[in-house]
Length: 465
Image (cartoon, rainbow, N blue to C red; front, side, top):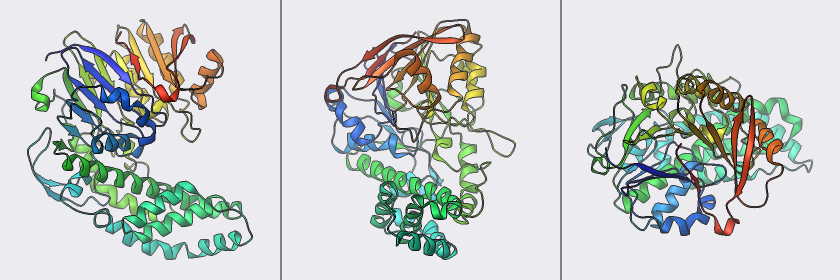
């Protein structure tokens, strides 16, 4: 293990995440890229960077992968990318395909991972053919609701839904008309209160489909770009028992720990995902949340540790899943590397966490060292921070008996937004970072650091304690 972590630069991409970890020996790792339009203003900064040794897309969602696609397609990183790790997202029905070995964290043999399906040349329509067939049958079950929607729409009320139309476009472009029709139906229903009670289960199902289609198309785009530019990549899965990673960048730089998602958890997901989608399409039934249904629960969780004892945890949007019927999404022994973290990236933009909070708090609270935390919360009210974030932050700071600091990008909505606005008032134009420190049970604002206008964005440099 060589190189001390010198700096962690968080690129304020709003609704999404992006972080560049730099070691003093030149080693660099880039985690996530936000949406393309959110990371594009950072182009001057990114073009100044030397080679990135490891680029990681933590999970399936487009607000983390889309910016990485743009970086690779346009060769924004002038020094190149030595290796990329893409999300461990299984095929939507758990189908397996023969995957070649070789490469960092990659194993030969049958693979259910969607990236391996795309690498083998399967189109989005081929990979999602089972969902397309199920959607076609499902269309008949919602025919009555469609007639109701059309009848209300004929009265002149608006039924436009740009977000749904975007997913419709993705589905049609991929050759999936039945899925496009299902999402379009939900999009029409979304604005019509006359069918409010009937539309809710349909919307729950269509929202999953909408997100799945857009994310799958983004993952395919990333795999295609990596192959086109001959960048080695892998869809790695964390070991069931944690151990330092080997094989990346000739083993130079800080030590890497891949904590999630574990092999046992991914296999569980692949085994049950077809049943989950079947329930989604039977829209009048509730989806069993005991089974993994969202990509957040498959997010890569990694700890980057240097020889001086500094450690950074990048959690993507992880939910840290476990339960009576669910194998642990974290590898056995994860507490040891995670407990040494001195800079914690809060998952899901400091918002909805799944089971992250209680497990992370139990490990971090016992440490006796300074801790910095970062939440990349955007300003969109469609994805505000959850109420759990403030108790988590306070609890960790109070129990540790050590200094703690929270950095927040932008001015968020929701519970954390209330905390921020009470301390700092309205945020000015352009990206901003609020530095909060605990003062007993209250977090006090040390300062609001404006990083410049959107046309001259620089990343947020968060020092290691």
